[in-house]
Length: 312
Ligand SMILES: Cc1cc2nc3c(=O)[nH]c(=O)nc-3n(C[C@H](O)[C@H](O)[C@H](O)COP(=O)(O)OP(=O)(O)OC[C@H]3O[C@@H](n4cnc5c(N)ncnc54)[C@H](O)[C@@H]3O)c2cc1C
Image 1 (cartoon, protein in one colour):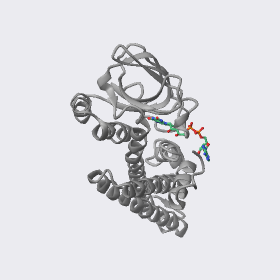
Image 2 (cartoon, helix red, strand yellow):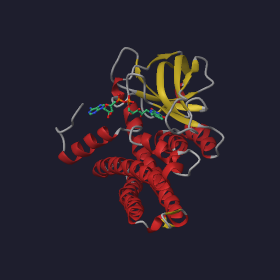
Image 3 (tube, protein in one colour):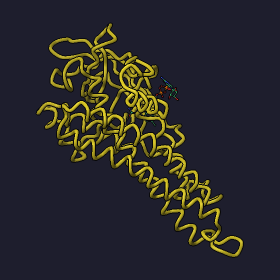
Image 4 (cartoon, protein in one colour):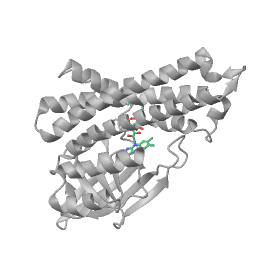
């Protein structure tokens, strides 16, 4: 879920939306072929839910840019060939820009592999150092000073991707518990014939439908926005719908995985079962690309309207 979300929905689609012809040819086509792995570097040690507080900076030099800073918790970070990196002009806290940075550039290094995660065992997560990394002029993504637009528009796609991944988790939990309930015998009958187990199966099935609807709706609205990108009402609707999809689907995925572990009993607590990894993996969906809390604040302020933002 994470690899595909970051490589395709965050990074590739940002290049598709904001990239020049050169960038599409040089980065998007190899990415689509699987020949170039992409990552998205917004978060920093002191800038998570508040990306506008990031410290990575750039300056114009010798006809190009020089970028310096630290990026934290970056998926695909140590395996990426190229990354979308967000930075402010040196000494300023406004006018953020986005750059496509090649990981083989001088001054780029992997500072740490974050291997001690409680899930996502197959997903690469890294802390990255950029020490005066030279970025050619043609690798500025989007307009100078409009990096936040690039970052936020990418997250619209990413959140729908997370919602979809969570729908997949719930679906697999449902399939796994169905099989288990039909085969495991306790107290002389299949556990699926115990009514309390049936309640768990029913709850997971209901969660699946509750997660599917807002996720599909967000994807449908986003498709409309893609053909009409200047429609601001539609953009607001997609912003709202993708936040709802992510918030709802990620909570329901975590809850469903927990129920699935319960149905599997002691075996469910083992990573050898088909459901334990879902419990570990689903948890992060409530954190990355906007935490539960940030999604709730976004949903409320988009509904209440201008002046009701909980933070600026
Ligand atoms: C496995 C993993 C992979 C990731 N991959 C990427 C990636 O590829 N690229 C990338 O850029 N980032 C990535 N991230 C970072 C992720 O997006 C951030 O962790 C997330 O945005 C939260 O930021 P934070 O961790 O700094 O938490 P904080 O922002 O410090 O939040 C801590 C708590 O405070 C709450 N909080 C913060 N502000 C408010 C507020 N105004 N009101 C109410 N509550 C608030 C939060 O909801 C949270 O509960 C990844 C994270 C993880 C764990």
